[in-house]
Image 1 (cartoon, rainbow, N blue to C red):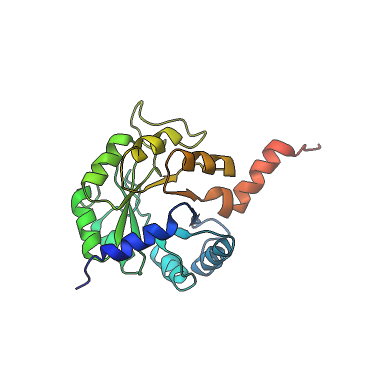
Image 2: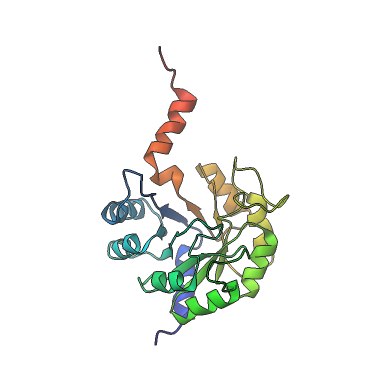
Length: 237
């Protein structure tokens, strides 16, 4: 039976401290979707200095695990319920089985499709041998995840839930949430969600982020292109 190795999890977290984690994900309708493409993108961003990869889906995780030596934060997006980031213990255990150091889960406290609590889900992931990154939207959720045993918390879902008055507009990253969660605590806080340029990343580190996760601004060329077209290109009729 696989047992949780806290030293391995702590080693992975030490490795990523102060660095950039790149999210290598593409939906099924994206031209870049596919395990081999994601593996190559992961290799490219590691060459550029990424200290870890965040990736989604069993096939992609297996391909990336075979292509890079840096830590991986793995997850599985599935279903159309509000909780779709690694929504069940079965999903979490399958992600852990790919050999990732950390498994990301929705830790917002909303009902999980399998009925398991965040506490029970974290225990199951530890039982499968991986550490846990708790994706949260609010300060209170972050504290609850830490109390439940999460090895790190990430601000991934800030601005994407229906918590009235507790999340910002989607226009920029929630630096205030990073600062609040990091204040006076040893649990690593990963800043994630709408980090679009190096200035945002620096602000997150200044606020106490352990590491910063950037995805779309690096790995989604069609959206990067669209931002240039929308802001700098004059169309001629």
